[in-house]
Image (cartoon, rainbow, N blue to C red; front, top):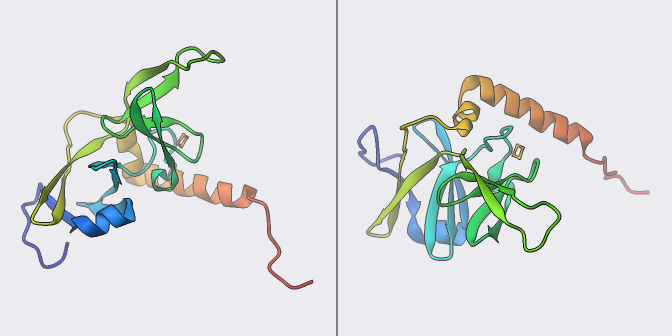
Length: 163
Ligand code: FES
């Protein structure tokens, strides 16, 4: 962010703690990477902001607790992603109750959040490879923008004129 001297690899200042708490979810571009910062139940989480499945906008997703884990539900195809670890969850016993949630493994890259003196910082965690990496690159960006356009075309047209 402007006016702050930061090491290249972070931690990167992403906002004042009070503002991020009030916002609950905040979108930031850190070192060219789009990151979603979520404040929920007293904890900050940071993860890649574009869904690993097809680049859906996670900042518009609902947050629910599934199998004891807080998850963001992608608004595009309703995939479930844990906030703490970036794991994709699926129903292990479809059609049965209670639902058993199982992990597909870590699909969404998460990042480290730290706090100090009322400021919040994100350090990008760049080791390993995760499916969400694709939608941070140029090719993935083109794909997700095309998908967003297609969604717009499908949404019902609402007349704004007077009768
Ligand atoms: S793009 Fe997120 S579930 Fe398909």
